[in-house]
Image (tube, rainbow, N blue to C red; front, side, top):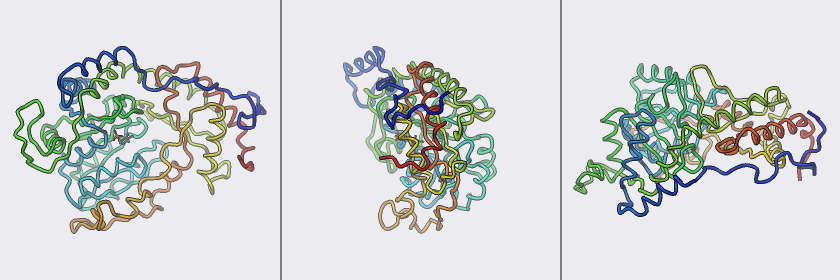
Length: 426
Ligand SMILES: *Cc1c(COP(=O)(O)O)cnc(C)c1O
């Protein structure tokens, strides 16, 4: 491939024309039928589509119980409550994820304890979990980030040894597997998200899943005003405990059910696109491709690349240089995005140690002081500053033709990347 093709950002021809990629998610007559049927029904709150969605998702994932929620974050909070975590208890969580993987801990007055990530997997560094356990630790939240499962064999062994509960944040990991088993069936309970960008989209929404009847009952109490009965049973409108309003509505569930009929197709399709792209990117200079370790099946929710900015001598100003490459790639028409720009402990709510005022929940008499000094998370920081990802352009119904264009554009930019080092972009 020619190394001197003029870059689009300097007036050269862009590799990928505008509007090349199809938008996510595909919506067709099936979605229209489901949603119209719901609209023409009579129960628009927790209605028949909610009941059916719970049943169908539980079957698809292989869980005993599922509860629809209005977000993945609501389902995460239900997990924390179901696991019996109380004021001042500590919960271990990765230092790099979506904010609510950790703020769901604050929602139950518990204290997050962050653990650095493993560079290869981008997930929590399982080797560092045990040193983070204290006499206050009640649970571990594992986040199967970008669709790669955490090594659940080792996590469950640690949890068993220390008598801890394990919550799976599977919000990005629909269909991802560890040792042949789907995520959401590996810990004590789990949360999925059906937000717009997720592999199963219902606009917004989520699902709490578990195989444990006791956990299901506790989660359900939190879910609907502290009531103990399900909406389909006779209600006595009594708050038996503190509850929230995390229920989903029938229209959203109808949309989710329609998308669920195509979820396996979506996952298979993006796996094929990623296989092709990953092969074509072999040998691209300064580019680090993601790994899929043995005994894991990635769902490729996000295809995440890192730049080797040490080799380019740019680690002193890593995120700025990464952002420069992103601009050059986007000018070629590649839909690359930077995912999270901050590691979790760096976010203000944690640095300030103040969520509800008066320093709560960190100021609780039941809490032990915790340290969020940022030097403890160098790998998460390095990943944060050097990564880019490809999301919707690798999803159904985008196929091999557009995937090959992505590879071509990345090659074009990366063979010239050294020339960007001393170059200021307007
Ligand atoms: C999207 C996401 C969530 C939150 O899901 P919502 O439905 O947006 O509340 C939590 N954790 C991770 C890892 C996510 O990607």
